[in-house]
Image 1 (spheres, one colour):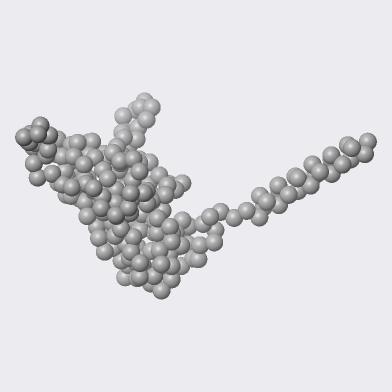
Image 2: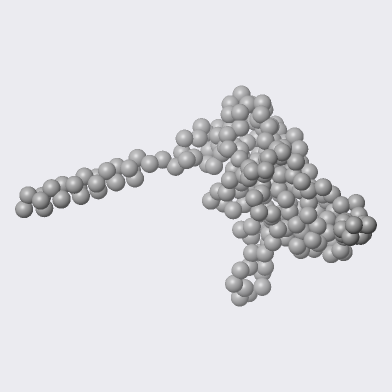
Amino acid sequence: MRGRVVAVAVTAGLLAASVAACGGEESADSNEAAGDYPVKVVRAEFPPRQRLGETTLLRLGVRNTGDRALPSLTVTISGGGEQERKSSLPFGYRDPAPGIAQPDRPVWALAAGYPKLAGSGKRGGAETANPKTFAFGPLEPGRTIDAVWKLSAVRAGSYELLYAIGAGLTDETKAETNGTEAGGSFTVKISNEPPETEVKDNGEVVEIGGRKDSGK
């Protein structure tokens, strides 16, 4: 009888501790200081003319021009067209055909391990609850984050690619430039013409006038 009383007491204590832990737990973004954070996009590069199968780099450099650290610099990427906005993919579109098991299709295929910070071999952008949003962590005043996405075009057409800069993971933290929401866009035409190549003396096939894609 005494053993059962002890067991019940221990179980009750564990349950109470569990409830207290759940009630007192705060999400990682709950401590973000609300407000508007001034930033400046100092670099925005993405080739306006591309070809199917071609690998290119999208580069964004963002500087904290304020006197407070950004809780977490975020970049949200989406196509500007109706079907692109409906897609859950940052570089994709929603196929409107009925009965498709997976309607989200890529316009660009994102290389594994990207985005990265320029000059670094490690992944630089963490995934968030929104697949279109990448989080790069706190950004101190005066510092710049130079992010790189490595992409391969897999669907021909003309596209508008939008990017929005954020200061955190909540609606109360916003990044602005001259009083407006920070961000911009790229206009890109992907041709279905294959890239021009040549064979070197050693047998290597290279693209004529190809772009470097080291990410550094």
